Image (cartoon, rainbow, N blue to C red; front, side, top):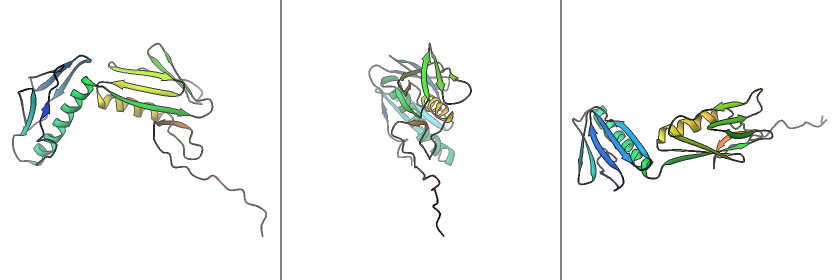
Length: 181
């Protein structure tokens, strides 16, 4: 039995949820989002709560049960509070700035890297800190990972793009050997 799946989701007052055509449709102040109901799962809305139950006891039904509950909960949190990731750029000559809606990264390459955020994602830059926010948790994480992948932090000097609070294990460089015999 799924510990996560059997918990109900209480719908806040400012969020509207409806089931139509195999989708859960969420509508709130920050926007709207659709969530496809996974196979083998029954969905009910009653008394400002969402309940999920598996149709049978197969392994796939049990797996989908907890997954759909987490996805629905994340959709509600995204519409009420939103999700965000913060990236830090470290290194001499590494810079980020915004040109309109496009993020421009100068990472020591022969050319600047331009990132156009998809619809629903907001990117802002303050000094060498990039803030990514939006209502879709998966999309925010995906864009942050894409930006980080342009120049991952290296272990010798720590230069690169890292998540805020990420700890990079540092390595010692080559030691200069003296003339000992």
